[in-house]
Amino acid sequence: MNATEVVEQFHKLPLVEQREVFELLRDEFEDELSPEQVAELDRRAEDALKNPGRGTPWEQLRDETLRKYQR
Image (cartoon, rainbow, N blue to C red; front, top):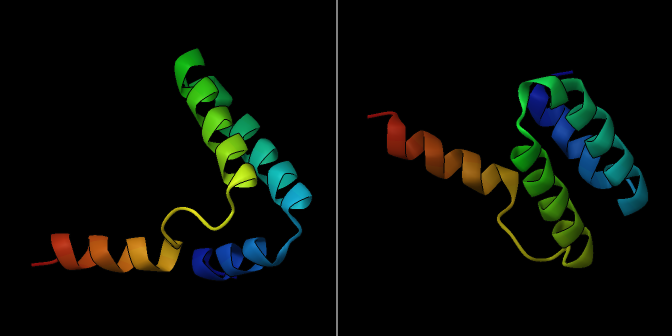
């Protein structure tokens, strides 16, 4: 399974399970993050759970970024 497929499957999970996956992944990288970065990720995760329709879909962000930097 590639990264895009993983993200697609992730979005199919109930929000509670999405949060669990996020926390597991965050914990994998926590040693590399500052306490401020961890707090910001936690804040953003909470915001995403409270406002699931807000934000930019990964596919759109990826496509825009690729267009911007692949010249």
